[in-house]
Image (cartoon, rainbow, N blue to C red; front, side, top):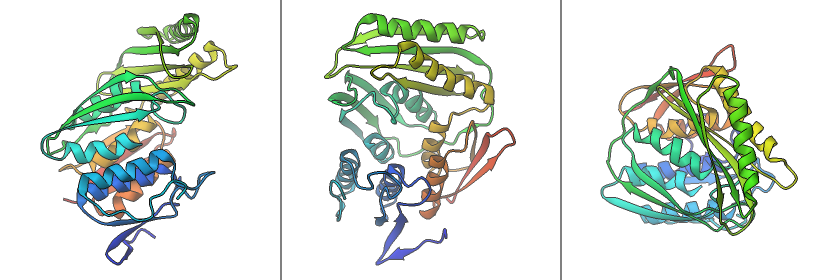
Length: 326
């Protein structure tokens, strides 16, 4: 099932494998650009309610094609950009600037704050030199946010060993309300501080009111461990009290804290791709072996870049080892 099937020189990627979502497309595009290997993706997003390319997926395809002057067929609307572009640009020579427009704080996607406070700092430990700034926040359903990414290509990535996270140093965060009364973000911040301080954690949460194209609210938290970072967020919705939003984000943070693992599940599935391009073995512990993690490991192994060993533990956590082929 895992053999390298090809068709007319193309590596065939089954988009219905595992969780069958957009992550297969993003990872395949990024690796195709980096390796120069032509790829054919079939059954894209087959396991989704609307199994077609959405606007963000099409934009990722078009942007990846521009990077390597590729020919694209079958990429049509109905037929996450940052994840697709970062590594190819980080491994190239020179400085690149990318302007991203759309949703910066939307459900089912990492908040801008997560990318800025956790994702990029962790990638920086591998040698990725990138700066991210928010010009305007964008909330569901209108979006219209704007983010600027500056990448200085280094051409080489370093490995990571994060079996142990060390003690928790502090929790920081931002409670945000766009085009809404200030008491909403204040209530989110107050409830989150109360819940986390009860466990003895040192907590610093900022409450801020933003301007945006439409109303929106959410809470973002970062757990600062001695050896790693972990991020958690919750999105506000009409009719959902601010306190319930805070409780959702705190619950996710506390679940990770009690797991003892170095990484939360979302960062884990993002790290295995760059670590597959390193020289030498990397390893990390993760709070949960998610379908995204398993699917991303499958894509990487299809390209022949690395062997990904995922070992579940009795308490539901996992240990992941990445052994690059080169």
